[in-house]
Length: 443
Image (cartoon, rainbow, N blue to C red; front, side, top):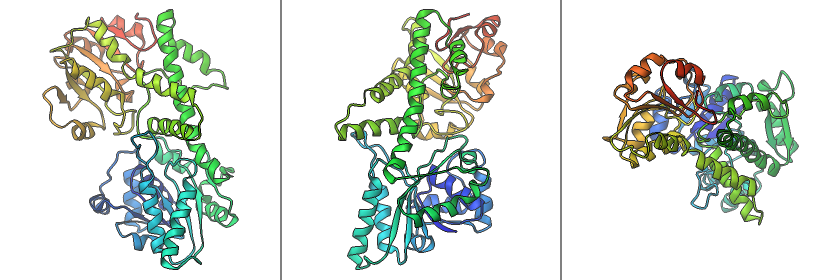
């Protein structure tokens, strides 16, 4: 099939590459000429396992093309997929200016029937706005006879496993009332639907809402577990034992119940706020969602509070090794990462940070630039040298089995503040280190 993907960001690039991999003919269009040029030269703008080879192979085979020419792109595809960003507005709502700009471009350029698919995370009712925008553009051209359908097809990708999520989706949500559009979407996703029926077809508004409900449910599980962790500390319980106990209940499960420093990234924070705003717009008080956000904001300060308490408020002039900058492992994404909150709090107290992350070093350099109180180190071991304590903010695999002897030797104060509960407190204690984690008693 021939399809066009508007937006070569995280969602658009992954989805386009995977669709090209199964044989579809994909044209990707973006307004960022520099990004398009880099992609045509084989440079991938984001880190995502498996993505680089996928893009390069399919680009070399001619199944995926990158361009800034919207006219060419609209002419190419029967399916027009909108995957542009929906940044958070000042009031917390999702800003639809890029989505509607694409819709207007489709209306200006289309010369035959199209299936317009919203892949971007958008508020309920966006499909109606897309439809109105395209219809208005067609009317200005005097081409009202051209038919089109607007379909909601939200993405459910997890950063760090997005390619696998696309290749083997657990569900494919399609919102449409059109039998024609449904048939086209079934053909598009047929290569991913062979093992068993994964496509769930519903009305457009329900499909739009499903994306927000899913992300807010996962965010709620994270905030709930963090609240239980904070309470466990006060009660003398071990949250890691509690996690095993409740996770064994199949109604709860083990996913998204790891205590830590709160959620970050491009999705959960923005989507929770957007749904809160949507609720306010229809006069509904989203008490639970507001509490989820409040707990998450507070949780990002928990490790800093533990550090400050341990050093009795005297952090000025101290140096802290920080392992982990990305908001989660297997990505270089630092958007709303807990590590950013932690570093900024330490800097405000006059402390210095020596940081290491396997993938997010360039992103950290871009965000913070040159600072006297930040040293970006080439290895996790280098970050330890001369530091007063070790802080862990991201659960990368290569942090899970460190040399505790080396940590003790390098730190001027033998203490580890673990925001991800990576280690057994008793094991750390045997190596002569104080160990401060989340929701657990010190050994």
